[in-house]
Every structure is written in C-alpha cells, then in structure tokens.
Image (tube, rainbow, N blue to C red; front, side):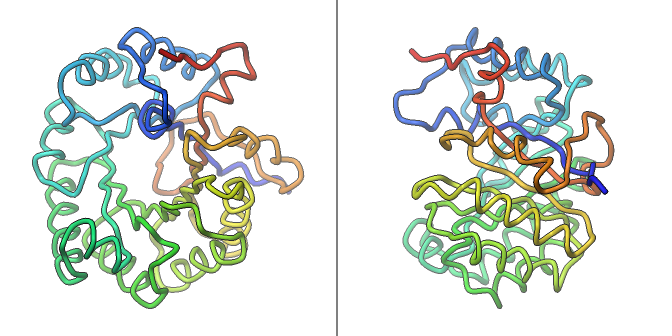
Length: 276
C-alpha cells in the first residue's frame, strides 16, 4: 500500500539563499514562489521577516497568496522575531534553536536549562496567537539522545506542533539519523520533521532513513532536506521504491509528513535557479 501522507515543504527562499553566491532579488523571489505554486507545492518557507527591507517587501507580496499554500515564517529564538512574523500575518512559524551543548555554549553562551525555558516561553507566546508552531533541534547530530528526548517532551508539552531534527553541520549517517528519529518517536507523539544537510553527500539517504523509521512507527511524520543540497529533488523520485507519495492538499500539517526540496524540483519542470 502506498503511503500518501508526505507533504512537500520547500525552503529554497530561506535556506536555499544561504548557498554561497546566491542572493535573490525581490523579483527573483516572487518568480520562484510563483513557480513553486504552479508545480503544486503547498508548504513553503519563504523567508525571515525580521530581516526587514526587501525581504519584507517580498514576503508581503507572497502573503497576498497565502490561501494557495501554507507559508512558514522562519525566526530565531527571539520574541521580537516572532512578533515580526505575526505582524505580517503568518499563520505558521518556525523557531530555530540549537540543542547540542557545543552549539548552545559556543554560539549563544547559554545552557540547556535556558534553552528549555526559552523554547517553552516562545511556543506558548506563538500558540496564544493561534498559529502553527514548528521548532528546531538544531545540531541534532551532536545532541545526546537522552536530552533530545527530554527536549521533545518539553516542546510538545508547551504546545509545539512539530519538531524539526536539523543535521545542521551535515555529519549524520542514515543509521544515526534514523536512530534520532526513532528516539523521539518512542517518547513523544509530536510530529517530526527531518532537515538534512548535504555536506558529505548523505542528505537524501538520511531523509529517506528518517521517513522509513517514522513510517514503521505508524504516527504523524515529517521530512525535510536543506534547499541547497545537491540532488535534494531526488527525495520525491524515490516514492515508488519506498511506497509513499506526496499530498497536494492543505490539511492539518500536524498530522502529515513534510518533505522539503529546493528549486531543483522546479528546475525539472522548466524553472531554473536565479543567480545574481
């Protein structure tokens, strides 16, 4: 039987623009956005509202078409970022926070007690405004499994709709990534989103391993590949081999699986990358 519960969520306009040498103009962003809608992508991460300037100009134009796809505004773990997303009218937001001890201490100068408190506070603030909330476990490859499980329980209890397992520095293997997914699913019913980077060419394998591990759990599941990964469009091409398909409908995202790919997918349909 084919599994039809996987949703394609595209992050070209946010994570894709972090690719070296890529900087989209407003017109280019809107052209990519239009192409994604035309090929049927229903979940899109279009950018970072708190950046202001041209980014907000583009986001406002995209939000005029928010009934055609679920647009997910990306935010740092900062309340002002979330306020910026809410003020623009986003119905769904993502909160980026790291869970590895190294990332917390070296990048933010914080500890895990601070992380749990901040995540809980921001989730509740966003949920009070009635939006869908996704939150990261960034640098999941260097996050010990017991803490990852504790974190999953904490964000779920706070009201988060989805937990993104981000292989931020691209060090995971399929076996290790699948184990991270399994560990979360064994302790929490929160929807899991796989976000895999391609530093060592394993993003597709890791994403597929995450999908398979979650499907065996028979619960809500999410998958994602970083936009600038080489060949991230391969994930949907494996649907017959792994017996899954993508839904085009905009149902309850918390009960479905999300697989994100970049403009590579649009390129297969006649749309090219836009380079400065």
